[in-house]
Image 1 (cartoon, rainbow, N blue to C red):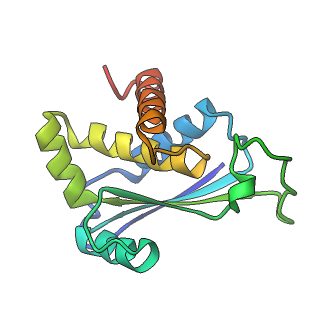
Image 2 (image 1 turned 45 degrees about the vertical axis):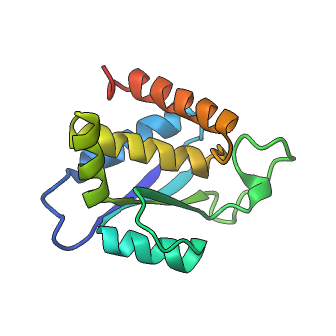
Length: 159
């Protein structure tokens, strides 16, 4: 399992790279994603997340987390479709989870919990999207939220 973490300039001391990798790895293991997966986690500014949201999703607004899958929709883990062909290097390149650090700070304050808990929640949310979960209607959103809570509880990030 390869988890690449990039923390943008000016945010380097805010979070521990090893901890970020550990959260992502624990979620991937709990979701049976396999050992031959690669993932990128980016901690960045609200301005960069808003620019990505505008450029790639057509939404000119801030957000907390973006997930950009490198798997075609038919290949999302857990989709009810035939299995996909493994890439030549044998590694499943899931994609990237991009988190706005400043939005995470705001949401942690609003929820009265730690920034670490909020970041863990956002990593989990983004990873679930990469693994095929959707939250674009109330029923799916409820299912995804329950899965997030279950995973975060199982890895000890929610007490």
